[in-house]
Length: 469
Image (cartoon, rainbow, N blue to C red; front, side):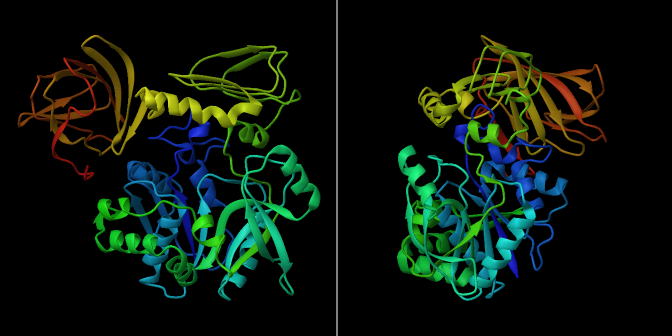
């Protein structure tokens, strides 16, 4: 049985301002109506002997991941929550340890949640070949047949061919090259892009991790031993996992093992790691532009323009990226989009909220959006999904006014229950213990006006919370 392991813990900083810490690129519908993680799972349809997936993600994204899986009818065998990011080697170790407890013969298909594969049939054929080699104890990675001298990818140099197969031994892995080196790699025909996708038996990769990175395995074993079930999620122990060394599967295992094998893959692959990659993957018009949202252009060529909330107009641009959101605009030449991460680093250094979240912030019960603020006040639009409830809580520094715009609200205020309908409101004084429930069958929308000396999200004392926060 092949068990897909979906690595969904990345932050996607190079796709800022759409991708942010609390809502990164794998959770976004960047190419079509499905999100990237949904497309990752959808492309597995048609592969035989495929078990329900194991998804490894950041604990902050757990409810969004669960909702996106529910929306596509997928029931993961496990959603494992990482309390901190530790790269791909610990994630693979956790997956291997968890599945071996119930299936000693399990084969893992490890997939990042944010790749594009335009030819699923070609991908399926390569997975079947990789699984056959994995069954013999090999650790298999996919080498993407390069279509251009990309400098944003690592490369794999092929070794000798395996008898009766298109697979090759791995001569060596090489880091992201400069352009001249990349051109030489592609011209030689000996080098392939490093895809970051793998197939191996769980016991085989775990044995090699024990051999080359025993501290990772021990920390992951400790974190699993002390893990706890939380609703539909498995929470790794924070202290044990935080003590785990940070490393990738490539560095920790694949560059050291003598069991490595590469299966060449040509399937329209793209790691969607930058705005230029999205331009390449997008539907280009006659001028070579990819236009998303309300965009008007004049004499614009070979550019990617994305508007989220308003009209975006551009004149005389060539080879540029322009991305507009409700609270930020990015403008960059296409050949410098790898430097977007520097902008994110600057925002983090200045403690700017734009590095972390969008104006619309998703919660397990729905979402809220800031629509105005000033000295001692803030206004939000809050949407609560049918049947969902906020935590029972109070605030030390702010009072709140709620006005229902749509739906029905059942408000608890200091033990009193108040039913509100459209155009009705309630006042929650500072220190009041309160809760909000949507008892109806349609989304509840209300306007919240906060007034007080401190309006930060951390001014919440929770007494009860069905989501375990």
